[in-house]
Amino acid sequence: MYCARLIATSLLATAFSTSTVVPAFAQKPGPQFWRRLSCEPLEPRTKLEAFEERYGTVIMKGFTQVTAIEVRGVRVDAVELRDLPRATRAMGVVVVVGSGGEKPQENRAFIDYEEIDALLSGIDAVSKVNESMTKLVGFEGKYRTLGDFEITVFRQTRTGTAVSLTTGVCNQARVTMSLDDLARVRAMLVDAETKLDEARQH
Image (cartoon, rainbow, N blue to C red; front, side, top):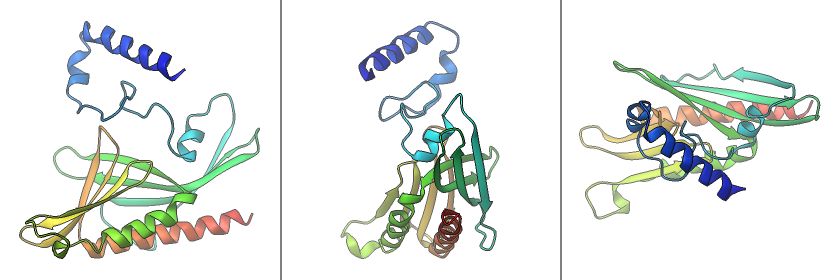
């Protein structure tokens, strides 16, 4: 099935290459692995994504935005998705990153409940990356979730260490912040996890 899908994708890409639609797709950066023309993964990587893509059923969505802590350009929501006919559910967090500038860009990343603790540990680890870990001039530390929420800590020449949060693959949204802001983002994720723990009891 995968090979058939891969061949179909290749044929479809070839068909587009002879049409006037080519320039629009040519402007996007090349994917690092096979994706649809919309640059989405061939298969959902998180339970939340899988629920979002279901057809022929009733999906109920519950969500709570974390508002006790705020970080510019970042929104965190605790989310619960229920497939009512099948009596199944998925829970997790949606992180929305919005970049400013002349062409504002916004994108989101899904993080399953089961991945939150690993993400929190990843934030703790990447926050400790610094110039003492290498004898070379620059340094960079990264952590990425299954749903393409990426945290990068790097040397910023004038102001020391900086942090970049990125969501999305092709149409990425990125916001740069300080380590203090990253700590606030972590607190937002902890708050969201607490809300999900409360929801899991019902």
